Image (cartoon, rainbow, N blue to C red):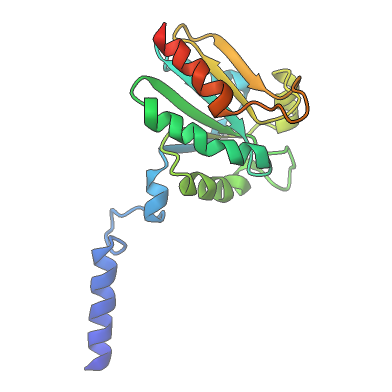
Length: 188
């Protein structure tokens, strides 16, 4: 009798949290909040096509990696910008974790990227680029990440924030640089 009661309690608990439902997602509940993590981006042009889908709005595209401490420190500010102005702008993130190593295809980075995005409650459009990050940086003339592209309502790059020419200790931040720039665009 005790064993049957324990099975009933466990079954009830699983059904209560939705894990026993055939339609329940296989992700933890917090992961369901991440709007989209895709692995089908193969080039910078395809990333720009995603941005172009939002023509008419200001778009903020953050290039980052879980191996980049400054990227991860600034990322919560992207999420905050989305929460503050999400009805007027589109915030997107592009993970540059893939390094082109054949034995570690982009899919192997998915879990760690998704875990970080989930912890940040990044309910924005997120992509995991499947182009070698070094080749990407050469193609877009970027020395390193973090980098943030802000696109105007016309779909063109209004400004790229990066630390390529920054003086030591004077790196860009969302608070000091990106948020004021975005708010200026919104006021126009």
